[in-house]
View 1: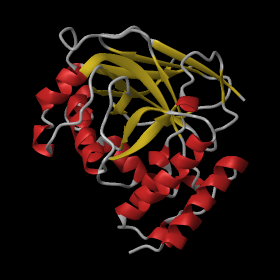
View 2 (view 1 turned 90 degrees about the horizontal axis):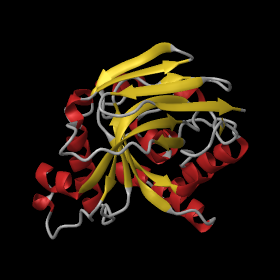
View 3 (view 1 turned 30 degrees about the vertical axis):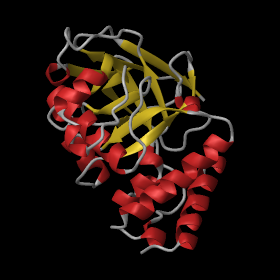
View 4 (view 1 turned 180 degrees about the vertical axis):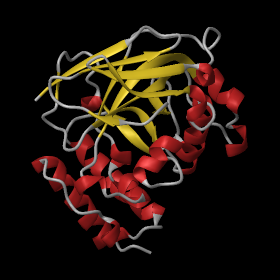
Length: 265
């Protein structure tokens, strides 16, 4: 079991890296490589500190859902983190990179929930149940980031670091699930007109809705279930890629209007 002192030290290390934008060493020396409760405790410490600063929880993100991203990160299972109100840069043009450390960008399907996913028992969290809880599906760009130097992360490192979250952009072009099947979408991501990533809905745990079901189970187990109104980033449809200030990033996901973001220092 990881000590509370070690968890607190990991929180301090990651928080300082975020504050100074100077990447830090991995935190697995403090919390180990297998202690997931400790890793999520670090995540909670970081999130609670930001909530104390006046931001709010607006949803969740699922990380490492595709084999391509798992290979990039060197992990073999998904994880989850929190979306906070100050991470939403959907209305910013261009988007400031002032809070980012080592950003990458990926395209994915997001879901806005119309109902809580808070059943009496875990067995009730079925694919049909999470589908019924969705209001609309939306195109999204996630700007993933790592406070850990050179992205030298193991699974507990990325979990602790709020699932390597940074910022997100979500489009306004929502689609009801009667009109769109998430597992069938095809994605192309370009930077300055050059395709840099491609994939499809099946790359996200076989179906972005299956990723949502997985998240709903984990949230239920952690005692913090998914709530109506929350935005869920379901996971990358293809590899994430680096970008820089001045770049124009465009995600084309079939069934949605293209989603464009530009960036500045």
